[in-house]
Image (cartoon, rainbow, N blue to C red):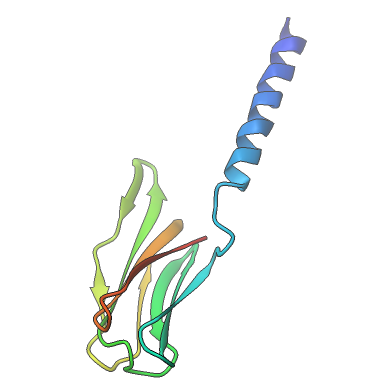
Length: 115
């Protein structure tokens, strides 16, 4: 009885692990969006934080970022953090981040990056 229960448990656990491993999009880590003809902004997320930055400082306007992180009580979004116009980047540091949301004032972009 214990042996068959163990097999069922480990079989179910491997199905769950496979599902979680394939649930993230192919563009994990960093995402690039265009705010002009030759101007782009990059949004990224890592386990320790997230950020948004211009490829050419100041071309995408005011940048924003907030991160989604896991904690003992579940998961939460951080508050939005913005840079000043022309500063070129904004970063937040919070452990256990799984995704981030990024924004720009030029073209009003709003997009996600996933880890």
